[in-house]
Image (cartoon, rainbow, N blue to C red; front, top):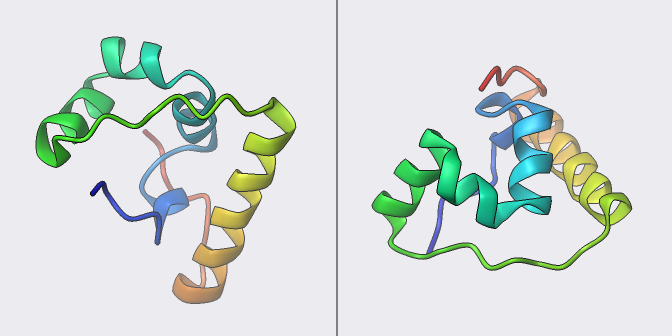
Amino acid sequence: MGPGYLNLTNRRSPEWIMNMILNVDVMLDEDPIARKMLEECLVRMPNQNISEEEARDLLEFFRHIDEEHAGVRDQGVL
């Protein structure tokens, strides 16, 4: 449906990831990268209605997966 999360922290900054999780509607309206992803995937990410703590847990999960599979994390600058 949408882009995969493997290597996510090496493609996007932690701030961008957190914003996409917590403020998906704003990101899809204002962020050019998020808009391009929507155009490519044709599926709008729904608002998850999760807390900042839950979003942080998701970010830490992505970091763990990237470090485990790619050997590096947090290389994303956008």
